[in-house]
Figure 1 (cartoon, rainbow, N blue to C red):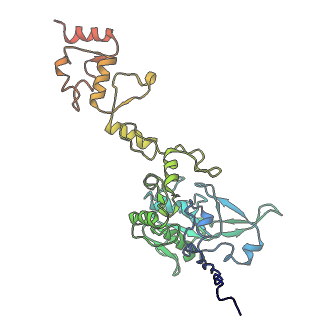
Figure 2: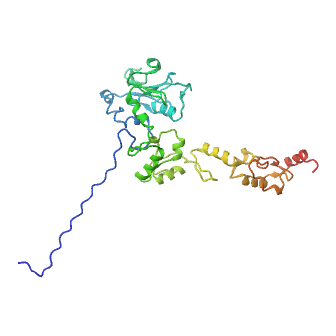
Figure 3: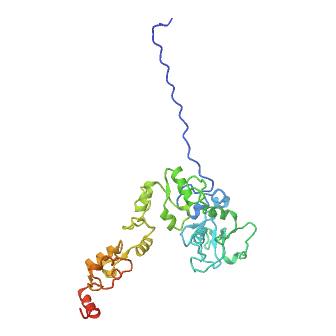
Length: 355
């Protein structure tokens, strides 16, 4: 018999069951899972119905081809993407570059000869025999003369995009490019109504990630082609710092900042346009010697003119200092202000001979 005075043995503790690790949502079919800039070979490779090695057939798997190179992006034009064929027959051009040009830039000009074309055809590549025996066969775009489709419609199966005037001879060539216009999340594929909704989705659902607003405005890329940043990465991107990965943002100098307004702009051209419109330059200082210097406002420019140059006391008396910084005043335009005392003396002789 067990001892009745003995303390009962403690029951062994059960180990808590581990909750299954939540898997990240799979990328929607055909969407960009990495938010990296597309290249033509990647655009359709991510689309299950867009070709690529899996759907290209035995000939593309067992054969090796020599590809043409796009004259705009310098990427290989592969079978999965097809090629853009213009009536002027300039090229070769990949469909993605032509699609960006006609949709984002709203230009229907050929990037080579600048001739406008209402229609551009996206056609599959054709195999051509090598010029030298033993060399690799070429996959090249057809010529404009070989396409008997320069009318209103190519065929019953063609896809016509009226916005860009591009005619896709096969539906598989149109699907991935037309999808770039959507505002679907580049990380999980969730749909968004507009760009603002996409930014809000990235902040709430993906750890406060974000697209760079300046790149959205300045880069000729669709939202799904833009880089997605964490908050730290975005600050490093704005300042032109590397994000830690080898080669990341190599050569990128960041978005320049206005020292007066503390706002950033897409590039130096945008910054200088802002400086010309919102700030002031000295009309007397020689640009070749001192460079182009800017001043925050008219008051700062007026102070510079009086401190560094020779101001006519009759044209701009000290009593008028309160109004000389007004926009359009004579002082800030350089009237009556000179770089040397000799120029001021000549001004006195010509304008104030009785002084």
